[in-house]
Image (cartoon, rainbow, N blue to C red; front, side, top):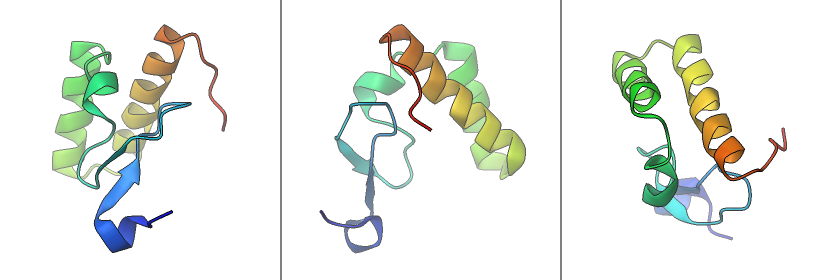
Length: 76
């Protein structure tokens, strides 16, 4: 598998998704469209403001929201 450093991409973090997305995006378009709008805006705001822990908490909440919609449990 190609690493993120080599091609500037990472796997979509949603359980069971192996799509590779640009490093500056959280998840693939299909899964990002499933994130509740207000939560997505919060993730983007916190990422652009570089608020560390708040961003990572919102990021995990977004991933969890998509996994829940798909009926998947987090694997972490």
